[in-house]
Length: 292
Image (cartoon, rainbow, N blue to C red; front, side, top):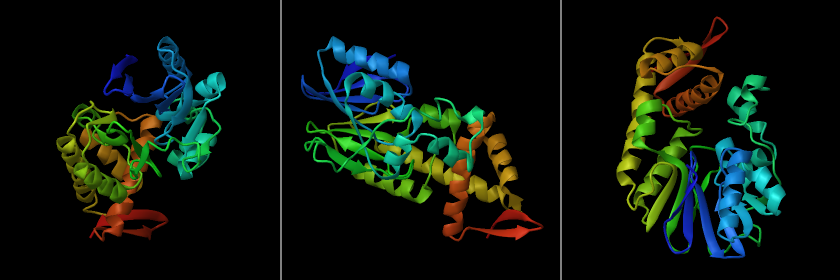
């Protein structure tokens, strides 16, 4: 864990739970792509940088989930590096309590205010700032989270963030987090058409061809959609739908999984309703969903 893997002349990644990319412009200008899940991850990355004589210039955040920005505060405090993010992702990175608040739908209790869902805040510079490395291309990858992006380096390595999960992850967890199902499917279509020397997803193996993995992720989305429609053959409230999803996939519920899977199921319901496949109506002061 935290092994440095070189994938091109100037690109590396740190092999950890959410892969951290490294682009070396030169010894004095080194860029991280994300920073890991906490201060400890940031410390380990700094050790790698120091060992190689690299000076950290900036962190390019793909999105604001805690496992991708958890090392920001430590690294910025230690090196004075800039942190680049944009849009809603920048807001969540500055004020990380927004993530558990969004997931829960209100002020989060202490069970949700921990490092896995709430990083420490950091100062953020917009991706459009003139200091952003011009040779790195920003790739919009919405769907998994609000304004998630990927990055293409000059040696044609593409860091894909969380837009595809590994086969093992899909088999183990089934319902991976998605904010906007429609946008996510469009992103999968876009990634399927991409070409690169190498793709580096945050939660899957690096590969020159990710089309099969894209198809697996797409199939899982449609499978979950169909499962929810089947659950809603009869009018069903959200809590019962969520219970049936957990039971159907053999998932274990705790507070964290309740908000992560629950938020995702709500997103599926919105996607299905907008597509005219499911209806929602209030009966006896309860919102019920039913297949159309």
